[in-house]
Length: 197
Image 1 (cartoon, one colour):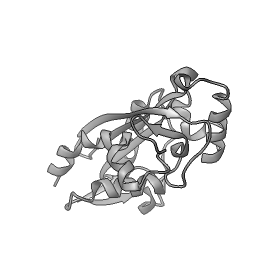
Image 2: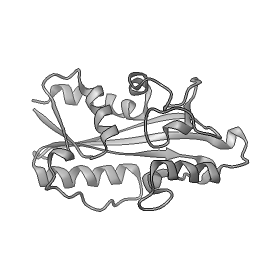
Image 3: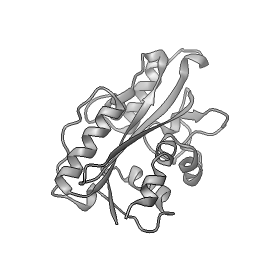
Image 4: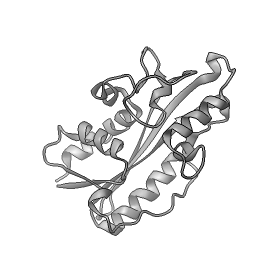
């Protein structure tokens, strides 16, 4: 059975493939398999609203089971920024490195408790027969004052999960995929995914 991950982000695709490899009857595809498909403009004020819109748009266009993801990093001391604008925090076409530099600049001179942060991920699973289910996962930690590590993507080189001493970019990919916000959200959908046929 085919499941389309509604993204062209290679890092996310690899993470989902790794986390879903235990479900043998699911063939994991992505939007890279459908070059003719054009995602809708992101709409919504929350991760949930954006993920829901992504899932329904892709499902209606492709007529397949779709799993969409909207996620980002939230810093309470910055009134929740970057939040839903995590991917374009430093501008519409900003690179990951530019987004991280802006976050470091915004947090310059702050105390550690002001650098508390969490990753949030909202997943929405949708099928052509009208089934829709969502889940959310979070991962709490702190933003460092400088980047560390070469793995991961996005804000991973700046984020240390609570009770860990390595950034997400320093962790082995398999370790990150066991403890991340994306994993926590996906775990809530595993029973549904395992029962799909």
